[in-house]
Length: 168
Length: 147
Image (cartoon, rainbow over all chains, first blue to last red):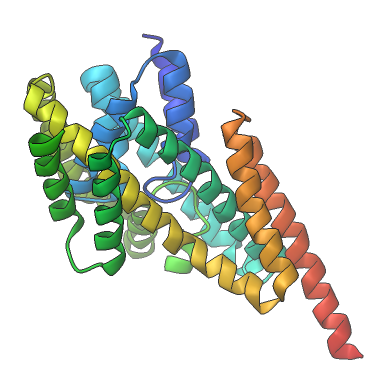
């Protein structure tokens, strides 16, 4: 394993994204192309990240463990920790930038691009997992339950896991 | 503070902890905030993953994972929908043309991703196009207000 490249790709994913799942499209593209991860690793890490305490972005640490053992997890922890330090710089220039139309445009444009990219990456993950009536049903039910927001995500995942064991 | 955090790279909650720590006690506050937030949660995440890794080859676990994956995708699609709504509402206030531009940007990002264009370029295109568009619309609105 080339740990320097491994860390650089982790850091790039965390630095050039925002939010907990922001690094997902970068890591999906880079780690699959290097042969360092499988589609299953992403589902596994996102699941652990969803049910473990702390920020949802810590799924990257789980992903690090699954792809690089304890070293991978620790490198992922550093990669997740460093980019948010940029907030100290941002807080100094925020007052000057926040009212510029371009600033809001850049942020909104970034969100639209992230959504478009993530939809395709998620569709890839979904199709490679195997398309059948059960998986399509789990997808639809989970989306509806998440949209209604009445059931915690951990229970949605638990239900999906049980459905997987029983019907797949 | 949350408004500032949204401009920062990386995980928002970690950035918030850093900013709060810095406001309360400077560099020492940043270190304590990071340790307080990340040490327990990262430790538990690693332990949970390590425990999972010992049973991942079990056929029942593999079936469970096959069930969890579409659920994660479904939940993420809803998350993306919620992420998409605020900018689309802002575009709607400027008329139907900007809404179409927003939809075109999402479709463009999807197409470029499908053709394996580097994600950084896709993000840059989205940010650049709306950055310019918002500036132009703001100038137009100013001119119309003067007239």
